Image (cartoon, rainbow, N blue to C red; front, side, top):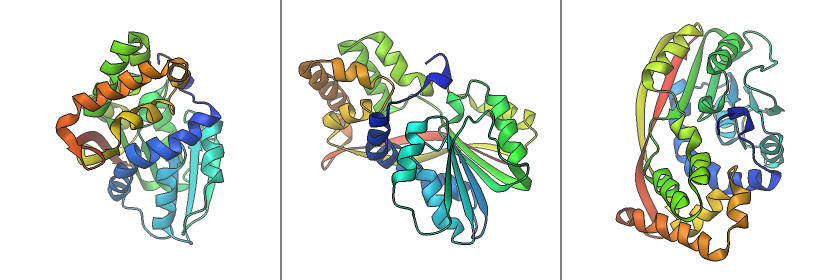
Length: 270
């Protein structure tokens, strides 16, 4: 999408997002992001662009009952789903529907800020990082991730959409990865926002997606092009799924595929 603030999903898509995207696509990365910020028991953590809360819930487990977590997302549907899920063991979580550009939280009120695959959506990344810096206590920590490439699975979906639906649908689907900032831009943005000890590295993991042909359609139903996919006839949907499955066949593993994935992880201190 050109205007990142318009990257919205319906209430139904938000529920699908939790079942598919949060579990399979973001879930494997969550422990790595939390490891990067070194959350400790009793700390206060903020999850910016929290979606349905996969990072916030694991953060609550790590900070324990003496800690506190806040999850913020621009999309009310995501926040509604996040709040409807069973509370994890650990610290309490407050869910807030609000923009990352205006967090509305007190200065120096958190020990750690996390942002998993959110920065690329913000229309003013510099302002969002200044807001994250503002709410961090002195020497508080930031850990955020953005994709460093389109990736194997998303590249296959992109090409299947272009072939069987339209180039516009493919571009809308892959927008967040194509618009992710480069390593040098991440360094510049964080330093410009007042962070110190800025470090950008590449993290790697293996991601397993089950029944990849059907998974692809389920995944697309959790994105802003959900209505486009729903309007497609069953034959077109099957062609999309089969195209992705064929392209990723060399990564076949049990009931689906397991493929290598990479992301940039930025860490810094206030």
